[in-house]
Length: 247
Image 1 (cartoon, rainbow, N blue to C red):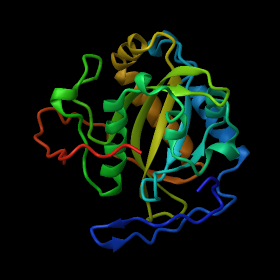
Image 2 (image 1 turned 60 degrees about the vertical axis):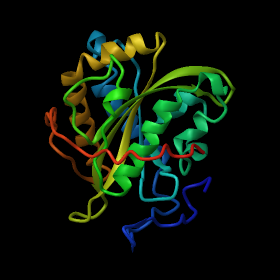
Image 3 (image 1 turned 120 degrees about the vertical axis):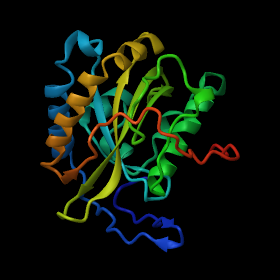
């Protein structure tokens, strides 16, 4: 699906079809994109040195729809990647990775992102395997989030280092019918993983700011999110078997 107005196939989880209502054509508007970016700017883009002076944007993806497409984004995400909102909504974020030369793609990180989305879809927890952890990755974090770093391509073909922090938040337009969605905080990293390591050292600021943006999202949806907690030391089955085929 290239646009939000089409109806995508619904996911089947453990043999039961998910019958959640699919967003309609006018679900995400420029007004909502601007309001979300205003909230992100007010919370994140004034954080100063604590978050490396980065400029952030925001995305919302639905893991129950085929390919986990974006169903909304802040206007700053379009500024970051060069695409219009109409070109973004309804597409999986891999449209920013597919044009990147294969030798510049972090394939392990790409697999982590795919498996994280699949875990959310099937109601499972996801953790990066210990043998694939990198030094910059923060310890003792919740299983409902993932820090990613990937080379992306803008619409004009220029490449940039993109930080993507994904977090599971439950959203609904109807109180009591919340479903898990994946929100993504994104920013260009001029100095690559050095910037990412600095961000990972400021998770308290990150958590506080994410909670504030979640409150702002409540103006667009009813929001329920898990409490940030320390799950370090919990033995979890990550469900890793054969490496999935990348598409």
